[in-house]
Image (cartoon, rainbow, N blue to C red; front, side, top):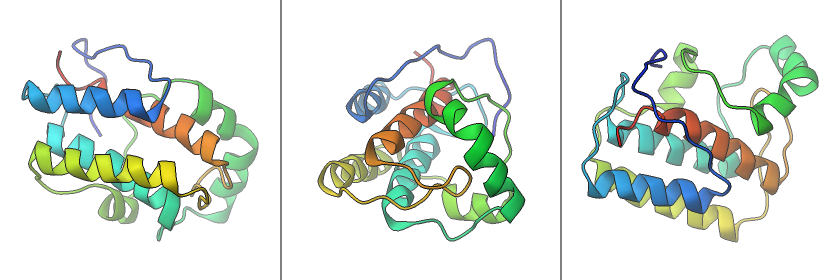
Length: 154
C-alpha cells in the first residue's frame, strides 16, 4: 500500500452509499491517484473486501493476531481513521488486490457489492477482529474506503 502523501484527501464516509457516490464521481472525472494503485485497483479492492465480508476470507492471520485483534483493534477499525502504509501479507494481497482494471468495470463491481450488502443480512467474521454485525461491517467498509479514496485526486 502507498505511504502518506501531502496530496491526500481528508474524507469521512457515513454510509456505503456515500463511498459509492465518491467512487462514481472519481470515475466520471477520470481522477488520478497519488499512491501506488490506480483508481480501478482502489475501487476493485473495496468491492472485493465487501464481497469477502459476505462470502468469507480464505486467508487468516495467525491465531495470536486474531486474539489481539478481537480485544484491542476492533474499536479502532470501526471508528478511527485507518493509517496509510500497511502492507498486506502476500497471501492476503493475492486474495484482496487486483491487477490493472478499468475504473468503470471496478465501479460496476462496487455497485453490485453494495447492493449485495443491502440485500444480504449475514456476514462472515473479519480475519483480524472476528465477528461483526452488518452495521459494524458497514462502518469498517467506510473507514477502509476513507483510507483508499484519500489517495484519489480531487
